[in-house]
Length: 68
Image (cartoon, rainbow, N blue to C red; front, side, top):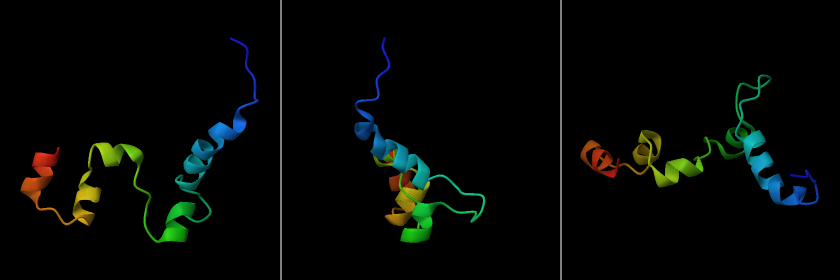
């Protein structure tokens, strides 16, 4: 397989997302959280809801268990 860099612009959103959701040692926070005041919801959390996502939606424990 030949490595080419002609499609770098298609991979840029993934690199930016990784950078913006990584904790920076200088601030102790992610750039996303500093701008938006909350942590980013990971794409996998949309598909498989986490307790954090469900608590933001204010679902009770029974609904959370059912969603898992």
